[in-house]
Amino acid sequence: MKASCLVVVTGPTAVGKTVASIKLAQHLKTEIISADSRQVFREMRIGTARPTDAELALVPHHLIAHHAITDPYDAARFAEEAEAVLATLFITHEFAVLCGGSGLYVKALLEGFDDLPPVPPSVRDEIKAAYEAKGLAWLQDAVAKGDPDYYEQVDRNNPQRLMRALEVIRGTGKPFSSFRKQSRKELPYRVVKIGLTLEREELYQRIDQRMDKMIADGLWEEAKGLYAHRNINALQTVGYQEIFDCLDGKYDQDEAIRKMKQNSRNYAKRQLTWFRRDAEITWFHPEDIDGMLKLIHEKQA
Figure (cartoon, one colour):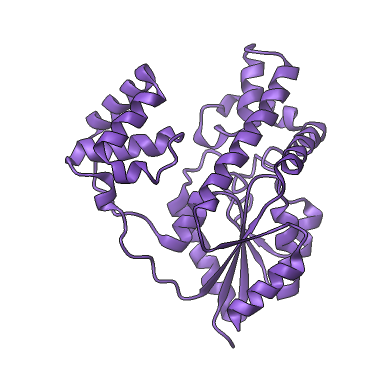
């Protein structure tokens, strides 16, 4: 048997990753591992665009709907679970397909984590309070001054990443970038990275259409059933948060739907910004399955 090969299919929300991954997995006679940070939760079916029962029946899927929303779950746990699935799959399969748009989860599996030092809780609390009082611009400026090298690389609109960097800078007195991995994780398999993309207007149209379908399929009722858990991390998610705010009386249903669509578009932009930094990704139209297969077989030759 040839060396094992993991085919990574990623891209922005609603671009068509599920359909393309199923077609690739069928051609490659293999199975799919989900790299979606929300599809792991059983209770979040409609709002996460989980593959339908019919789609799940076409190809075996892993790491979908296997945890409760109250279970602690993060990129490290995902990487551990995905590695275990791959170890089993590669005994009998030449290929495996990883499908999802959660960039941090994909990175955790393929590259591992930085070896960051512990930070005193008082430092973390102080930074969080300052951010809440002074806003994102203050946080951006603090990280830019403390570690200009990292500031050039980080998503500057992601306060969680900026706060984590500032915690390390202030907690250790050293630049955050000095603790980042200098060498890549050694993988026991080849990796082919495929990105799916569409013209902006077509992608936005798909996002709007999918949100309309989610609502028609019962997203509002699904979110109402989860309202009591609204503050847990799993539900800090586009689609659910806007409905929760509507239920709290912050705006009406029409405005909630408008915000859901706009926030989904913003999320797609952030995903594309993340993935376009990876020069190893080859980009395709989601229907160009032949082109994707050609690349895979060339890399695996």
